[in-house]
Length: 409
Image (cartoon, helix red, strand yellow):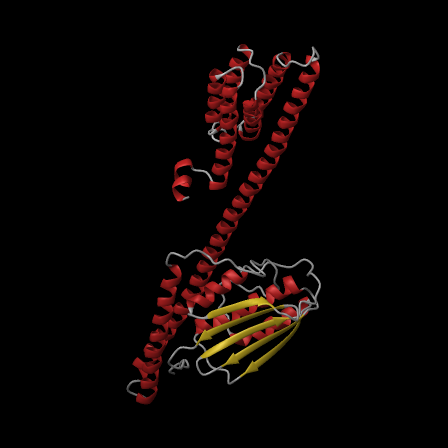
């Protein structure tokens, strides 16, 4: 089966059908040997059968060859024979498979023109016009069937091409969204690293001035410098990872890139979880019924991880406002464990569409996957059986506790 597909470049079912048609025409051609025309008519039938093998790839040529052999049959005055079914098959093929419908029209005109002399060669008591009408009706019916199948085939091909184009555009938009979100993440991580370097400089200067007057304060400042440097180095590694060549974006289900939010904030301002209540208030003002729950002992997170938690909560609430709508009930849960922090946002999907939403600048699930991936976290999102949507993000905590910034006086 593989060999047939490779040689003929066609599906096995199409090849089998064509072989069946050719075998049928060959059988009719062999029957002509026993009739009055003899072996010459059989050769014409065999030629028509062989030509039909190429009716899909070269329909116009096949129609021309079969038409020429039919003309030989008319000139020989052999009359219509059983293998003349090849003429109808060739006509159907040229109407269905030809690049231009004009070729099918010309083939139809030729077949109708040949029906008249063929009818004259039928012995029916001089009523040749009855035979001509019958042959013309059969020819016209075959032509119309071919036209109908051609129209349907071209329609399916146009749908497939449109679907392929939409898929390519969707992939391009997803890649653009990933690239934009990576740039945004890199910019924010750059700010975090720059802040850490500024702390190190301040602490180092403080240690230099306090090393003689207050050695204990100087030691604490040097410790902060070391801890902040380690943290900044880790953030720098993550920054380099973000700037590497991005992989192909994953297809997302559910709410995708979002344009609606009320939690906008200046691009260059460093965000912290202390601003989360203000963010929730803005969403409440927009119409969401937001409830926040904190489980576990809140830990001091590294700046980059803290920013990721904030952005995830912001994008999740944005999705809830856009897709669940105004009036929906949303529960935001922060769970602090010994090894990770979990952000869970659940909505009931019972709201109404938001009016005149303002852009968030985020990229929905695509952006959240990128942010979570930077910190080796996991993201799960999907519809709830009870209605609404649930999103859960799990971010691992660093192995060493974050340090508190101490400025030496």
